[in-house]
Amino acid sequence: MDMHTEDRFQGLRVVRQRGLSVPGQAYHVSVATRDRQAWFSNFHVGCEAVRAFRQPLAHGDATLLAWVLMPDQVHWLLQVGQRDPLEKVVQRMKSVTGVQVNRVLSRAGPLWEPAFHDRPLRREDDLRTVARYIVAEPLRARLVDDIRDYPFWDCAWV
Image 1 (cartoon, one colour):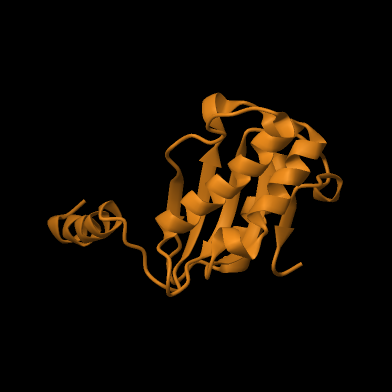
Image 2 (cartoon, helix red, strand yellow):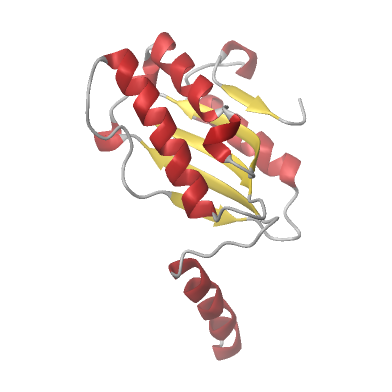
């Protein structure tokens, strides 16, 4: 990488390290369950998780564009709103989901790993293409042969 390219990316890293996100920016976020426990391989537990993170309270003024719930992780395509930064949205979604799923499982303790992975989408990224990629995760994991057979996904464009 040349010095100018490195300088451009350094600025992005500084912004993200400070916990700032850009209003209106879309992010592909993935979060793993604690110790990669496959909690969501149980249909009823998966349903409870979906109910939780689809609540408007969970994502605040962010828009949930697409998602897929895998047995041990979740992928969200989120567009950050004006009020809450990405980190707060993800923290709230993890918290709401954790409380509701723990209630169903009659357990206590963290459901999710403390960290999460996010990738800000670039202007040239097509949201629908990224959404299709996210929704196809069960196919790549060979959980189903047809996405219509997988119950835990949704997309704003379907």
